[in-house]
Length: 437
Ligand SMILES: Cc1cc2nc3c(=O)[nH]c(=O)nc-3n(C[C@H](O)[C@H](O)[C@H](O)COP(=O)(O)O)c2cc1C
Image (cartoon, rainbow, N blue to C red; front, side, top):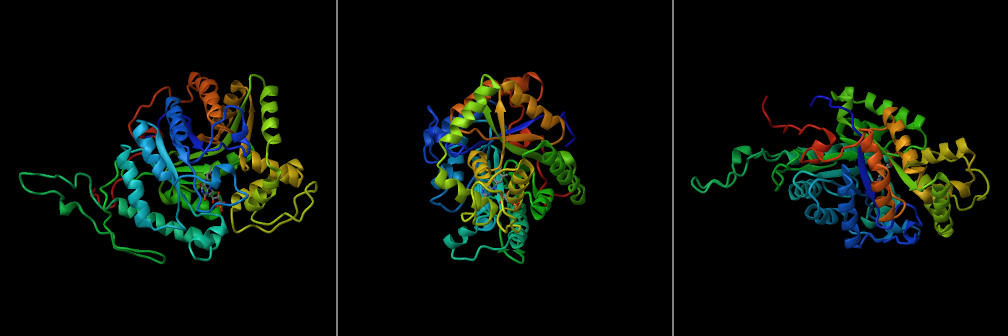
């Protein structure tokens, strides 16, 4: 597909209890990853604001020190199935693991969601960073490099299964008695290092051909996987310099896989904290920070760093730690921030409690729109994953304040122009591997 005028893409990253660890305590905040009316209301609000997609993250553990949004939450694809019937345009993205799961199940679930939603499904393919997950599956958590090797093959199998049936494979022709046209059925017959999957899939080809694939690992192997298989990349950066370096590096990797830069959208996440004045916004953030449960912040930081830091002086600097096997890119981001800004462990832990290492934009709607424009025009981002600190107010304020400014500047759509999530991203429908010509 030819490159069209570059337009900002926006994802609404939905966490039931908000992104700030204390967001659920904000006056008027509603919360709950199991509160369906709340979740539905947010999906509908995001569609009204013309977001490209709504995204539900996921994990396969529940930790006593976990973020309130992550302790208990519904399985995300089930929630997205309800969103599919409550909305018409917005893309529906969910995380599913390539380390803990089977490609057949996953290909089937996302193909089903793509059909249910008329071509709006996206899969955030994650390798699952947290080693404690292994205990829920009776296995040892694989090493970082192995997780990515598994992910490479997993995604290939899923994409192969999505091509199991050509378009129009089910004529249901009463006159001839042909329900399924077997000449349009393909058996994958995959035998690899990690998976053996015969196929075909028992769901017809998804409306998007392949649902959108999101990648959210930013390590070296994460970037390689994204360059080969990703349509969208989620990432976290604290500075424009870091976002630009990542953007250049990742886009530069695409050519090796025969791909064009515009075929992959890079979307860093950020927390918008809005106020009528910058001071009002900063006061709001200070209030949220003051409500943070301090007993939880160190374990959360330890999780992100991949090292237990409970024995260290909270008012001292971050100690020198070896590279973690867990979340490589996030551990690096936090370490860089601590060194760059001279943060104490306590301050670094608060940064994780506030936005888990994502950039916090504090200010008036105008100031936030300016910053977004700077990152977008400066090629640090093709768009953003918007992470409201609390719901629904944090989303409603962003939709009412920031989006109209972006629209007025011609940076963001005023209405949906296509049907599918691929249309929203300007991405072509992939040809089946069995297509001729
Ligand atoms: C916006 C965003 C959303 C993410 N969502 C999830 C998620 O839902 N589940 C998960 O296990 N990991 C999630 N991750 C983490 C990544 O998948 C990945 O494990 C992490 O960034 C470390 O990858 P790396 O080791 O390649 O740096 C997310 C990351 C980002 C930036």
